[in-house]
Amino acid sequence: MRYLKSFPALLLIFLIVAGCNKNELLTSAPGAYRGSVIMKRSGHTSQTLIASQINVQSKSQLEIKSSSIEDGKVTTIGVRAESKKKIRLLLPDWENLEILLTRSIETCFESKADEGTPSATVCFNGLDLTIDLNWGPGGDAFTLSVSQETAFQHPIFEKPKSYSVLELIDQAVSQNFDSAIQFEHVIQAKLTTETAYLNLVPHISLGSALNLATLTPIGYLKTVGDLVPFLFPTRWLQAREAHYRSEAEFDAWILAKANAANVTEGLAYGVLRDEAILAAFNEQHKCLQDVLERVKGLELSDRIQPGASDDIEIIINSVDQGIVILRSTLVQEKMALAQACGFYNFAAITDVESTAKPSLRFLRPYDEIAVKKMSDMTIDRSYELRQINALIKVARLGKTERQYQWLDPTGDQTGGLGISLAPYVKIGISQIQELIIKRQKLESELISGVARAVTIANQSLESYLLAEVALGIDNRRIDRQLYNLKAGVNWSLG
Image (cartoon, rainbow, N blue to C red):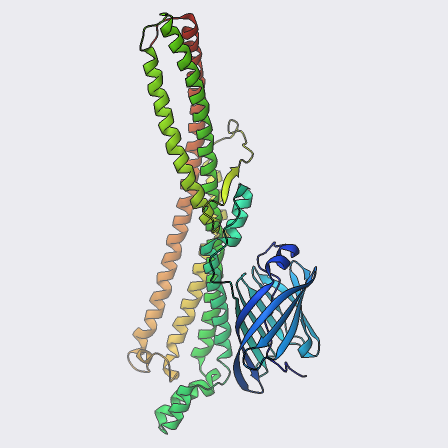
């Protein structure tokens, strides 16, 4: 099989964000990119800088033309969109090889190696692209890493518009800055795991060469760790630890996305609440102005005592102050909401569209049985517990690793074979017990969180029913005051 004759160029994939349609991809993908590619061929590794240009070739296909900055060799590569979850890489420099990739996580596609076909991984977050092709242990491979030339220019502000609560939640889940950072941690952990397993294959480094050059037993022992790493149990244990740490990072990413959705939903409902209050204040202001004009008319006709309108003007002034404060609060809430959603433009959200408002009148408070069911469901589905369970697996492997640390010439020297080995291993046991206690504490906190949420929900429901009663009383008082006003009866606003 002939491998790539010239250095591969930028390969734009089809996955900027889960749920993007093809038109959005084709309009946002074209542009200039720069980066480098690391190529391993016949045991020789080289790195070359590349520049690429991406153009739309058809409604479902992109054409990528790239060139080596050193010698100007040009390579053309195609990417065809099979569906929202599948792409096909078209590699003419690999004897017209085609590779079908399937979405593995939000911004990555992967394929498995078949006979004569390399495994492929393509990740793209909208700015940075990485591509990995691997022909298996000891075979050829390359890793390509590039970025858009405009990646570090000033961001383009989004056009202000109105959003529904669900649209804002979807935006936060896919574009929130914190979850995007955590996603990079997932990628790093995954690559760390891959590196740990690949390091089990014999390899060489400058340090190993220098150790060999010393011609001493100690130097030879240190080099053995690179030449035959698979002989040391600690290396296999470390690789498995990296795998479980990768799982923990993935759970942390899910938690970051869930937290972004939760914060965004809370802010959105806060905006809706304050907009409703502001609308009520404006309506109240309008009604008070009508009442003020009537009272002043009655004052001029001597039907009520002069100065009666002062009390109403004080109330109007208080309402005006509330309106000013609410308007300022709404601006700040929308700014916080825009940031939670991952918008650059702090004023990207003009309005939050109201959602259906189910009647609370017929709801019943949560009882102990409901709380128990929700607590069990929380424990069963908690990503926090999944994460700490993965860390417990890491700690257990770490304890086993401590038992064999003395075999590794480059391992922790405090774990040498001797009387200190027993307490050294017991440290690992204590670390496991510490994590188990933390898991118990987390379970308690989750159950308490459910109880707090239920308490707040029941209290809110009770307050809502009491507020309905108070509203009826206030409406009757207003009717009486309006009747007295029309009848010319002298009355006090207190």
